[in-house]
Structures are given as structure tokens and as C-alpha cells.
Length: 218
Ligand code: AMP
Image: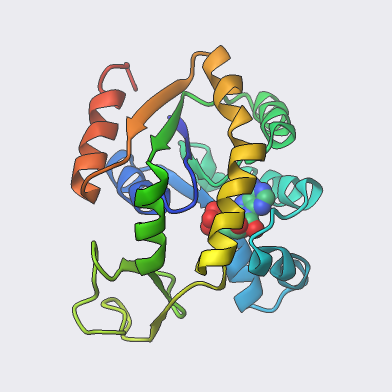
């Protein structure tokens, strides 16, 4: 099963993605994670994407498409994957379809997490991430056991550079302009599954499962 998850920045799609890939045993592909790792590893890709990410802007399509093409060709994608954070533009969606056709694959469901803007602001402000292992936390909804430290590896948890209020609003604006058109694109293909994103992590995950259970996912 190949899935795609989309939602505005702060909608919790990263958190839900982790639960989904665990349940369905599929590979999690997050272009944001790939870029953050590249920045951490100080690779050429990292240098290329850092300024866009820090400003809350999209990385140019040609870079993202190339990264995804390489990732999809890896063996662990053959038995199913969840794409998180890609596509973000119609161009990327069209390219994805071309890549998958070549690989004899297709997307089964597009999960769209819907969240009210005021909830997004609240969630964004509390978001923290471990600089070392990438584990994510929320000061209110998913606090670490020890204040300021990662449960998994003990390193400091910090606010992502693109999680400040200014960049967060910019990201929301860009999402609405560039990414929201994908809703119509996937709706026309009858792949779109709308999920209410308010409430606890468990509640949203329950709704995702309920939606998936409506379809034969074998
Ligand atoms: P995310 O972790 O998905 O929120 O992505 C973090 C940042 O990485 C975004 O704000 C963009 O700067 C960049 N990024 C990730 N995926 C894409 C994509 N598909 N297209 C353009 N930029 C992306």
C-alpha cells in the first residue's frame, strides 16, 4: 500500500506518519527529514536547501524531485511507503505520477489532515524536536519525561528554525497557495480521504484508521 499524507504545517502529519508506518509496516519517506539530515551531515544537498528551509520557503521543485526519485528507487519502497511532505506543488505531483508509472506503482490513498488555523498556531508554538535523533515533542500535547531533554537519546530538544511565528505564518501562506491545489488534483482522482485533525494524537489516528478501514487495503 502506498500512501500520501498532507496537511498544513503544524497539522501533526509527522506524528501521524510515524504511527501509520508502524501499523502498516511501510516505509516512511519525509522529504523534510531527508533535507534536515543532509543539513546535519553538511552534504552538498544540505547546503543547497538550508537557506530555503530556514526562511520557511519551499525548496525548488527540481531539487526535491531528484531527491525523491532517488529515494523511491530504493528497495525498501517496494513493499509500500508513506510520502510525508511530498508533493507540495502540482508539478511535484505530476512528476510523482510519472515516476510511479515507470516503477509500476501508484498511490492508493491521500490522507488530508484538516486543522483550524487557531489550533495550528497553538500547536506550532509548542513544537520541539531533538537535534540529535529527530524525535518530536510538544510542550503541551507530548512533553518529554525530563524537561528539555529527549526521551530517546537524552540530547537537548529545541524549536526548529522554521517553527518561529514569522516563518510559521509564511509557511501556512505558501501551503495555501501552492499545496492546497493538490486537494482538487487528488479529489478528481478519487484518492482524497479527509481526516479531522483536531483532538488528541490518538483520536486523529483513530480517525485515520477508520477511514482506511472503509477500503480494501490488501
Ligand atoms: P516538513 O518537515 O515536511 O515540514 O518540511 C520542512 C521544509 O523542508 C519545508 O518547509 C520546505 O522548506 C522543505 N521541503 C520539504 N519537502 C518539500 C517539498 N516537497 N517541496 C519543497 N520544499 C520541501
